[in-house]
Amino acid sequence: MHGIMHAGSENLIRVRRCARPIEHLEGNRRVVLSIHGYTGYPGELAFIGRELAAAGWDVRIPRLTGHGTSGSDFAGPACPCGVVR
Image (tube, rainbow, N blue to C red; front, side, top):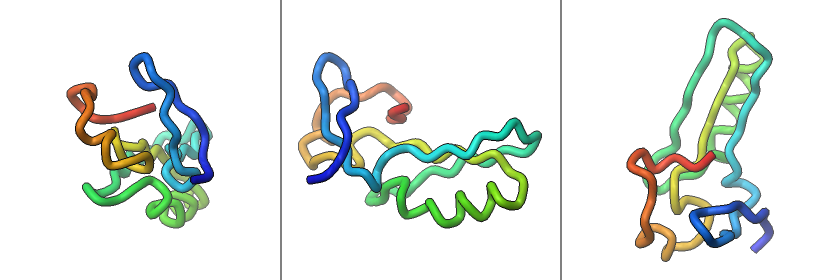
């Protein structure tokens, strides 16, 4: 699996490249927060994120806990909101 390492609690986890959080932040007054579905990952929203950024919106697409790593990560503890920065 190609990916990057992220700190999670006390352990490092490998996150797939397509599952990394996406941000297009230019200080715009209009902001979109887009959340992927239960079986999804941030990369599936990359196109719409780029289009919204080109139209003058700031965009944030976080990765939810366990998505883009391994199935066993869904069984572990997570913050109440499930968002990983």
